[in-house]
Image (cartoon, rainbow over all chains, first blue to last red; front, side, top):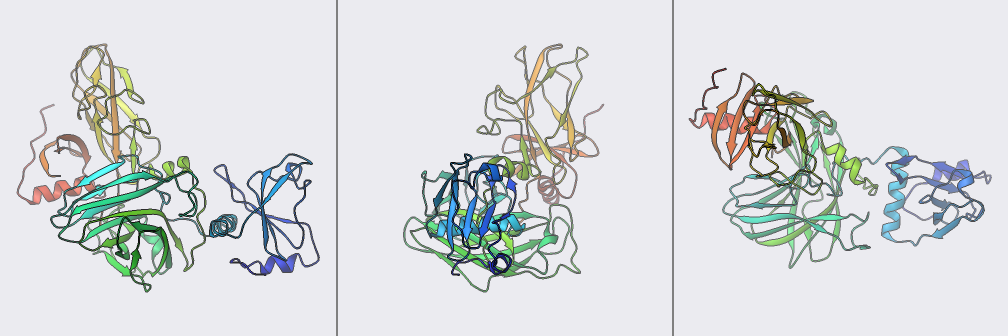
Length: 415
Length: 53
């Protein structure tokens, strides 16, 4: 009964050749179900009539053979054998983890698919924090310079498990000090007194780069000093081929600590030594326990929704703060009295009360809207709360249509 | 990434200009922009007062 997963309980339950057992549920349109059968191959009659859907995995327990359902047509089901590759093991591990409810990724943007604020961020060093993909920041300390950007994987690549769409690339062109890449997980409380496994993929364009993994508990504004925990497995040395690393962290209690504010969070950090390099990072998973349980499909919609308590924008998916277009703008009439208030109701409640920036969709400038008389009335956001605010102006052309974009920012950037 | 100026809007909001971008920032501990504002104040800077109603 070779294989990476423990099916002993299933074997016992099905020792008498009982009917195949179905495990798991649909998640966001991605199947995480699997079926175990004691000693039977699937047939053309194991089909939609049994409730089976395309993507379902069939695992035969007596010889560890696996199939995936490619066509669920009644009476003509097509089951394709799955090869014994690392990618398949990851797929099955994800299916098992998803079905059991274990192995959830505590890092919300694990596939680095969501980049709401920008797809490229330049740093001129000095330790300044820069937001890159959602829930991610980086800092180049000292007199350093570089850029972090979103890059696309080739279609069908198999070097990184889970078939992610994007990876993060950091090009450092000057350096006098270390660099830190941080992946933020909300709510510090869930990490105390637990063993955490972090799995990530990395490579460099040339040579090698020793990355030092850490897991940090940050207690927010006015809270206790942050606590950094190292991994017993030590550094992860990236080479010119993609490698998957898993590092475990035994997180300490937070008893006696002061949590200062709701931006308290824990983050996985990769510290790079002072040097120039091109570093690629992909597929990050933070989970309870000491074992990597595979990458489960997350999907853009769910990931974006999970990230929205920290950052929201009115712009289109591919447009960013200061872009000049009208896609998604707030639109309303200016009051003839010359004093107009426009309410903004957020798409989801923010993690903390956000900073609000109003952008002009015509000029791209901040602090103003644009009206149909070509004026740029100044707007101020006030009464800002976690769920909404209002923007007010006392200028503009009375009775004109008025438009603006907005950005809501509650991002976590403590290091 | 330095704050260029700040203006008090009301008892709950301060308007910051940073890198040429004007942002309305809630005066709450959990907002990183507000933390930057507090550091700016600690550096001896002063905000413009609120406009008369």
